[in-house]
Length: 290
Ligand SMILES: [Zn+2]
Image (cartoon, rainbow, N blue to C red; front, side, top):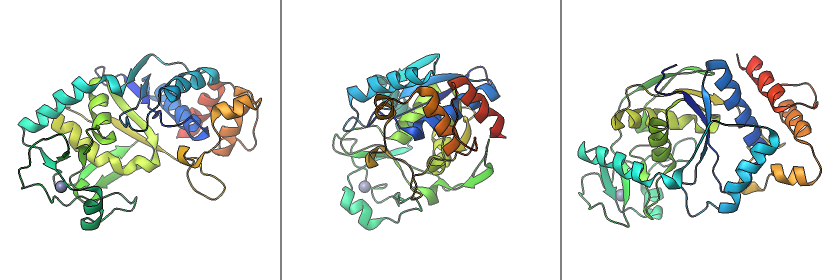
């Protein structure tokens, strides 16, 4: 472990209440933290100000505390604007970004998409020299290179970010910082050396590694991508689909120990649910991680 980067992070978005998928994700974060000797930071990822709600921010802390999780540091992206502006300026000075005025409709009509349905932006505005104006997005000049890394669970992986996402956005047209930019900036400046997250974000890794390098980070964080809990139809649990929330289950009378045991069983760590403390749950996941 690099002493400059002693943290891993649990990083939910306050765009809905936490659900069972978040519990599993948190268990992986805490299990990996113990396994590899990292400390845990809670980061509230409210970069999408159009969807973030104060009530959900308060609920994140309450729900985690009710389950028994503790953390050593906490941050919230809406307080990090100065950081994002400063780091963006580094990229601008290196001529690694450009402004883009493509509408959402035009972007979807003129670019291919990857297997996750994400745009692979081909660089329509790259040579136009548009000003960094309010209603313009800001895109990164993604290099055409193979990025190799070793995922702590999935092993050696290779990806060319040019093929995965092309020139991805760092700021959107309404002035909001994107997930991709905000997390790389925060991981860099918040001492995060280990990123633990769901497999649905695996294809964000190569672009985040090259972006971190471009910002001046000497070595990228380690990555561990974990499987997701799926619903009975095989789809991932999502806040948008109104998956039952932790507080919904709590209000219906379920104990934290019962919920933790059920999540561990659902994820395949137990043959059937039993009552588990948060520490027992973390140990269970830790022992099954490798
Ligand atoms: Zn454009």
